[in-house]
View 1 (cartoon, rainbow, N blue to C red):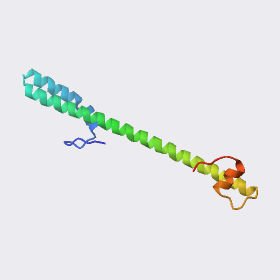
View 2: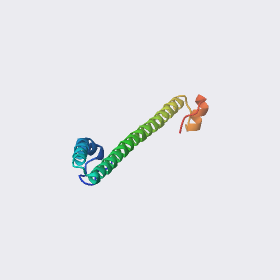
View 3: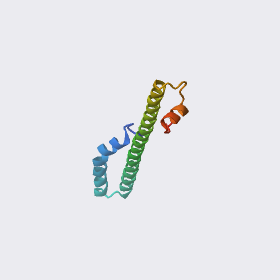
View 4: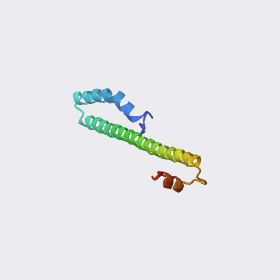
Length: 113
């Protein structure tokens, strides 16, 4: 996750805790009639919002990726377990040596790799 270069805190936490501070600073800058300060505060707030959004998107992408990896690994584990059970059953039926192709031929179905 992205970190704030000033405080080192995670940006989305930093953004949440400082949003009120930005709004307060913006109100004071407008009250003092300082257009340059208003622009600086707006620019900083926009940069922090963008960084916050990017951090959340990165976090969501990492979660999706890990879920996809878990599903793929689970499918591979299930396929491997099916093959092992079929192999044990083929050995019990007297087939020797038992390969994946033997199991596929004996049981008439394909086993995923």
